[in-house]
Image (cartoon, rainbow, N blue to C red; front, top):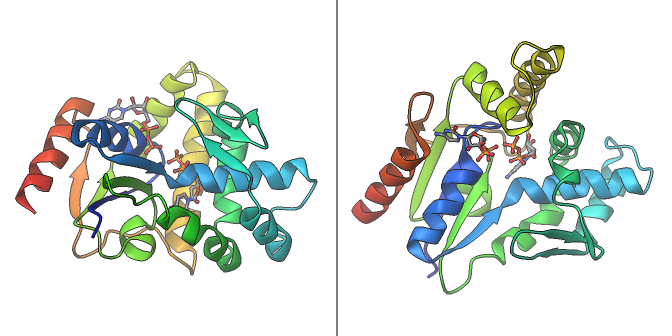
Length: 216
Ligand code: CDP
Ligand code: CDP
C-alpha cells in the first residue's frame, strides 16, 4: 500500500512549506488539498454562484478542470496560482468546505494523488477522512498571532497596517469555521503527532517530521 504522510493544521501554520519539503526529501508526491477548496471557491465565483449554494458548488467541485503543473495551477488552462491565494478566496474556500456534498465531490480526486512514490498531503482532514490509514499523521500548529505575522510577511503587508489587523481577524474567523463545522472539522486526532512551530524554524520542523517517519 502507498505510504501517506498526513499533515493537518490551521491556516498559515506552515503545512504547505513543510509538506512540500518533506515530499522532496523522501521523493514522494505532494497534495495541497486546500488548493482544491480554493479552486472550487474561485470557479464558483467566476460562474457567479453563491458560495452557500451547496448543490451548485458541489457541481462545480465535481467538474473542476484543473492541472497541477510544476509551479502553476491551471484552471481551464489558465494559471490561477496567484488568484487562489487571495484572502477573499481563502474565506470562500472555508465557506464551500462546510458543505458535505462539496467534500464528497473532492474526495476521490484527493485520494487519486496517492501513487507509487508515496504522498505527503496537507489540509484539515487528511488524517481523519481522506487518508485515515496514513503511516504518519501530524497536527501542525502555531499561535494565531504568529500565523498572521507569517501570512502578512508572505503577502508583503506591513505589520502596523489595518490590512494586517484584517489578516488576524480573517485567520481567527477561518479557525473558528474550520474547527466548528459539522463535517470533517479541523481537530488534533489521538493518533497524530503534535508539532507546534511557533518557535520552530522550517528546517527543524522538516527534520522532526522525517525523524518521526523513520520511526514508523
Ligand atoms: O493556506 P491556508 O492554510 O490558509 O488554507 P488552505 O489549506 O489553502 O485551505 C483553505 C480552506 O479550505 C481552509 O480554511 C478550509 O476551510 C478548507 N480546507 C478544508 O476544509 N479541508 C482541507 N483538507 C483543506 C482545506
Ligand atoms: O500551508 P499553510 O497555510 O499552513 O502555511 P504555509 O503557506 O506553508 O506557511 C506560511 C508562511 O509561514 C510561509 O511564508 C512560511 O515560509 C512561513 N513559515 C515560517 O516562517 N516558519 C515555519 N516554521 C513554517 C512556516
